[in-house]
Image (cartoon, rainbow, N blue to C red; front, side, top):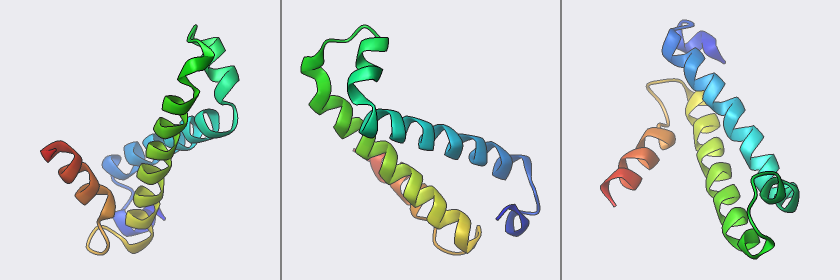
Length: 87
């Protein structure tokens, strides 16, 4: 996957970001109550935490799509960052 990016430091750092996104997606979608309890947040925030988990899921999927087509192809991740920054 990094071959399309010539193993640049940017691709490696985005790969690390991808791992973090996967970690937070799993925690927020499948272990919501335990994550909230571990961070000292009450159970009334379950809905907000799951919405945050779906947001991480969208960022992770768009980053995977960007990786799979290379830097000149589908750039959904960067378009998503641009539109969320403009809002």
